[in-house]
Image (tube, rainbow, N blue to C red):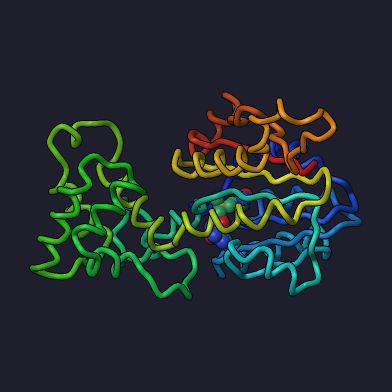
Length: 310
Ligand SMILES: C[S@@+](CC[C@H](N)C(=O)[O-])C[C@H]1O[C@@H](n2cnc3c(N)ncnc32)[C@H](O)[C@@H]1O
């Protein structure tokens, strides 16, 4: 329990093209799986690590200290990457990594309330300073808002009936625990979808976790800020685990790597055609190898996309 195996580790290290005196940023320190490998490769550089989870920071600090002292841990949401680095006088970096989502220890620690497999208070916050909890979402959001959250972030066809079931139950008694929520979800699922493979609460738990942690909003903000921090040749590598996140990253990288005016290029002389500031390092996302999938089932839905500054 509590072990986190870093996903696509070699692929990330290769993609970041690490220079021994480079400045790197890990947006999602977690248990320092990726950060440790980056730190080992930059004896003359510096690593800045973000995490919003105090527990992750406490655990990882000693692990990094055993490798070197040339790192700084920042307890903040990666949405504030630009502001937090600026406070430290850093405006340009050689590489940025983000390994999105929750870590295995967060899922495994029942008290965090992320898991539908263990009964615990409804929490799901990665950052314990965040005032919004899963309990607040399920007990106070309107039927419409709950339906939207479950439909958009959970991509669950039964969103409306699950939301209705949650609302019906909370009229009797507020939902307090993860198992209260699991029961409400099961009661709202159609018989047909209950027969499908996978836990019936998986998508709704995912949806509520995304809402609680404002995951879509902070990813978009990071994608607005991080590319501008890269030096020429610097790379931004992002691992996603959900189709929703992958779409957001793919579209942002695409927008940054094409020039809208390209379509009108015919009107310009070749020397007048502007070149975009970025290009896609890999046209198709990098996926885990068969061997990694055998070792780590968490890698199953992982996709790595990399953007390079021209
Ligand atoms: C998938 S884990 C990263 C695991 C890490 N790469 C490793 O190998 O140990 C994601 C971590 O990022 C943190 N995290 C997720 N979203 C974040 C955000 N918006 N800002 C800061 N930290 C975030 C989580 O608290 C969690 O510890």
